Image (tube, rainbow over all chains, first blue to last red):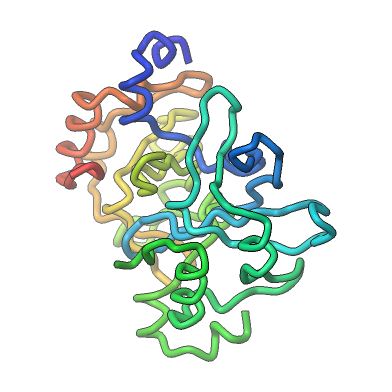
Length: 128
Length: 128
């Protein structure tokens, strides 16, 4: 990564690419710097090639256990200092968010479900 | 996936999401149905959340060996029957394409390199 490190921070932030592999397992923090969970998987819209959701696993945070939280990609901000993503979400928003259990598969193609999910997080739908 | 299978093909094609995990390892074919290689990794543009490249590993195809071919996401078409991607590329285009060796890291942020790569495949740059 020597070539990339030589580039300015500004360039890094506007142009940088990351391997999907590397996003998976990346920690997610709240603005107070507390770790909320890690990115479990990334859902890609096949047609547009846009990342639709980063699915966060909380790993027991707040007793939620093994449930998965699909987060609209747009609510994640990468923090180079922390080496992870920050989401500006309060506890209540997370507790009431749509989730699914390990072993379940949500109907990703259901636009009504998708719209509710994006609205919950105050995010614009990825297909708009 | 029962719920998804019940949906019409048209809906599947327009709305379907796929996990980045599942894309990695997916075979890539030419229009004649010959396997060219497999998707080794996916590069995501952090800022826009768009998939920039599917990096294909040829695994020895045409003697190329362990070199990686970043393909603009837009040149890949998913073929549900084959369970893989089809790229409409001839041998010459692939042989002359930009590649990198295992252990190397291209300067993904280099727009001149990125432009050349997209032009090579006749694709529009992911940042346009």
